[in-house]
Image 1: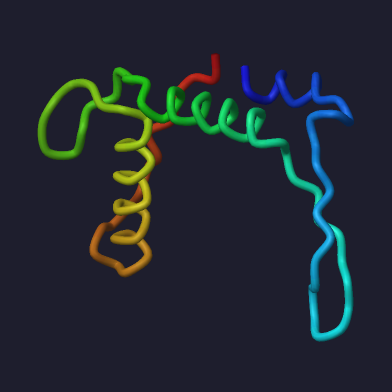
Image 2 (image 1 turned 135 degrees about the horizontal axis):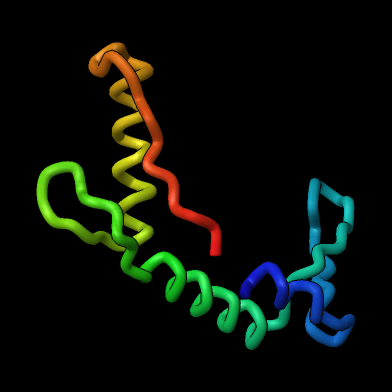
Length: 95
């Protein structure tokens, strides 16, 4: 959904800001306009707050995508520190 939306951006959806990038040198930055940036942020928040049918580490049969990402980072870190013998990522089907 969000990836497809980026294909629909137009030049009017962006603003150019000129400011000092380094001492005495001007530079330009291109940003999404406020409305588009807020809309994309809302879309991402909705995606990360979506529930998935993958059990949590300690309890529960469902969790938000945000929680799943955090748990996978924790499990990977434990594996890299040799606190776990193996790490098999719990992957969502991409729909």
